[in-house]
Image (cartoon, rainbow, N blue to C red; front, side, top):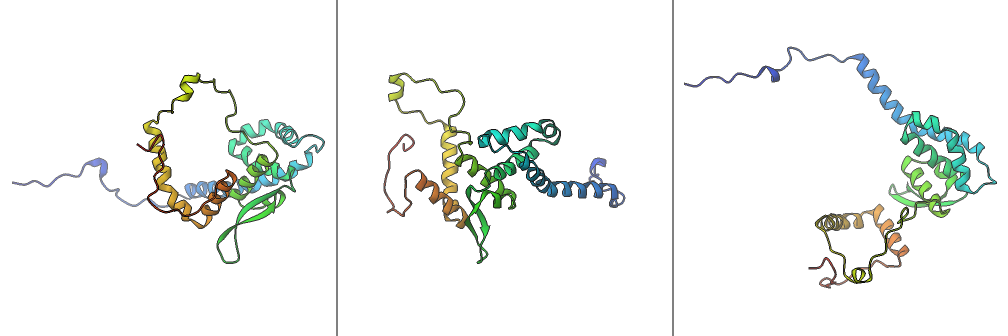
Length: 219
């Protein structure tokens, strides 16, 4: 004899579908408006703060001096607000520095286009932040690779030995390698990859298949 399984009380359907709560809807809308206006407010604040920049100081010092005036405000507003403000202020401080921005061209496709730092302030969040990084790099304000404590020198004997390859490094490399082809064939990322390779002293060209390059991870 079979018995009909009982539905657990915890997963029973509610007696009626809840109606929209206007208060909840208001909170959701306010959250959306705050997110949309954060960038605009940060740009507006940076535009006014640009008048406080002391052009007699080195560019990094003049930016830091203004940012320090509003330390308490940034503590209350949060890290994201401070980061956007500093990026916008950096572009104001180096207004004529040339940068590259990614915009939609006449054919509807995205293309890297030259602009000034001042022009980049009024662009999208991505372009503004990327341009600010370019300005910092151009003026030597970016964090240098290997910054901080200097690594201890390895003994001569140890330096002669090839570094062991860990499984995490192999996994990381495999993931990077798997993503290489989609990025390389992408209209936007391809140009950035080629530019970076040229920067490092390499050129990109198709090669015959079958070439074997031996190294630490080739086994």
